[in-house]
Length: 142
Image (cartoon, rainbow, N blue to C red; front, side, top):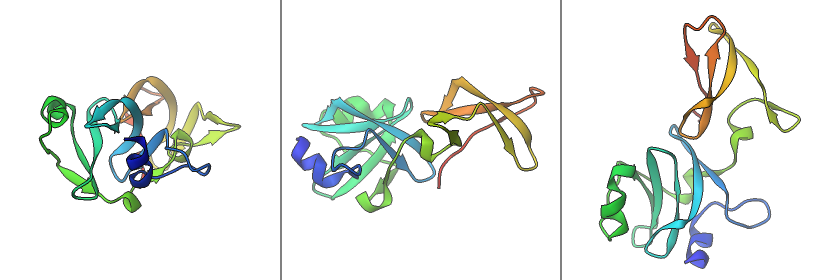
């Protein structure tokens, strides 16, 4: 299983499996080595998961409510991706960091200053609260 996924998944600079994969316009997915479809590990957020379909040579993205059907062999997806469309990377590739740490305050053009809120995430990416409490902001990737 891991050998197949190594050929299908984006790899990190050391040639190993990425711990996190960026899915365009969707968010940051975390490797789930023990949450498998067939014998292949998956990537997931709280709401969605990504799994490799060997026959299609594509990654299928679907919601977690389809987990039982997919893990039993059914195919469900609302979007598919080739490996080339996915990018290996972590939070530091999504949100501003300094010295290896997420910046606690960020200024969004025309939205003002926002403070990091690690208690609220959107697809595994922390959100930022406007200081006056009137809005939240987040980074969605490409």
